[in-house]
Each structure stands twice: as C-alpha cells, then as structure tokens.
Image (cartoon, rainbow over all chains, first blue to last red; front, side, top):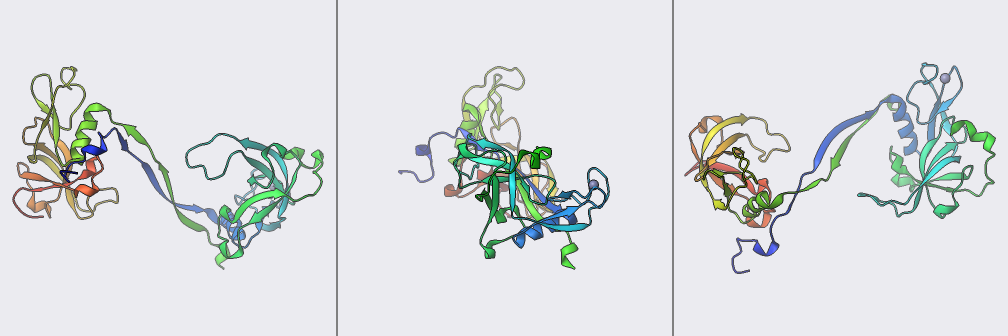
Length: 170
Length: 152
Ligand SMILES: [Zn+2]
C-alpha cells in the first residue's frame, strides 16, 4: 500500500452491521428453578397437582386445569415415549446441529405432559410415534442448571409404546 | 434452603442484522473509513451532511460528493453524565449537532469536551477519528468531536 491511511483496496462500503440487542436479567421462578436444579443433578424433576394428580415437567408452579399450587416434587424417569416429532431439513442462521435432525415431543415415564427434545443416534427417516427413548446427559462435571445438560434423546431399544398409552398427549 | 430460591441469569437476545447502505451513504461510510468527511450537493447547491440520495427539500437526486470539515460548529447539545454501554464513549460526553465547515446541515455525534462547563453552543470542534486500522466504514469510525485547539 502506497498510502497507509487509505483503504481503497478494500472497495467501497456497501453494508453496515446493525445488530439489535436486548439484555435481560431472567428468572424462571421457584418452580422452574427446581426443574433446572434437577438438570444440574442429571435428573428430570416435575411437580404433581394435588387435585388431579397430573405431573407437569417442567412445572410452572400451579396446575393449569385446577389453578392450585403444585407442591409435591416428583423425580421422573430418564426414559420416555416419542409422541410426535418434526424432521428439520431447512438450514438457518445460527444452526448448531447437522441437518436433517429430529425434534420430538417426549413423554417422560411418570409425566402427564410431553417435553421437546432432540433425537440423535438414529437416521431421521426412522423416527416414529411411540418410539421409546432415553436421555443422554453431558459428563457429570459438565452438568449445569440448564437444558444444555441434556445432550439429546436416543432410542433405548425397548419395543414401541402402545398408542393408547400416549394418545392423550398429542 | 437454597433449593427454594429462584435462579436468575443474564440473557442476551441479539439479531445480527446487516443492511445495504446504497451508493451515497456507502460513499460517506467509505470516506469515514479513509478518515474523510463527505457531504453531498443538494439541488440548490447546499451541502448535506450526512449525505442523502435525495434532496430533502425538492426531492431531486443529489449531486457530487464534497469534502467537509474536519472542523465545525456546535449548533446544540445535551450532556450525558452517565454513559450507557452502547454509547460511543465511556466517560461523560455531549450528544451534539455539529455543522461541519462547508456543510449546510448538522451531523449528530458525540463531543468529548471533558465536562459540560467546557462546552457551549457556537463552540468550534474538530473530528477525532479512530486509528486507521480500527476503522470499518461506520459512524463509530468517528470516535468523537473535540474542542478545536485544546482540551480533551
Ligand atoms: Zn390439577
């Protein structure tokens, strides 16, 4: 460069980065904090409604049907059933998982509400409703109070669940 | 018992937009990257800074780009005692409308005068660019304006 103060060789400026940013101080509340602390211990924690007996995971702290506080903590199984799913084939900005991948609703054993999870270790075209899956966690020293503690779910080899067992959760 | 306490965490939501700037603002930003201040000629011969593609009075296309500054006059200002993270300076400064020499309109930017007592409407200021290696073709290539011939 003849003149170090010019940037002609970079060409004209044609675009401008204008990021929009919002900084939040987020609190999930007491009930979801219990769920998140459970993740830090490598387990799924839900709460049971004292009126209808349903177990919510993560619990919002009250039963949406009965409007009463859910006070009983319930540890759920590490296994569950795929109730429904979506195969993601479309790339998008910020995508961190190789496509195609499977996003599924998983009904954990003992829960009365399904829960969204990534399914791995199976070709995307082999996913099906009723498939039995298990959670794969990060290494114990990597556990945090975050859903990032759950790497994904994978088929656990059990026979598919009977449709009758999850038809109410679609 | 810590288990009964709610967690909290910082969370940042960010959309990394980039926008196309067009030929006129593009030339202005390229000028900033080169350490130059550019305006554009309006249809009645006035010089508009920052430049626009159309004359704001007549709606006609604007004309040639012309160099303006590097000095100018503070037309009005407001003091910022507690700068926010997004602000161009970390120390207290003024947002000011600066009419650059050769321009007929004013440009909004920061003035680093040291304190509100060191700044008055009508004061002359001059541009302080970032070092050439840090300039990217954006308004922040101008670090601030400073009082002409002294202070800050
Ligand atoms: Zn209930």
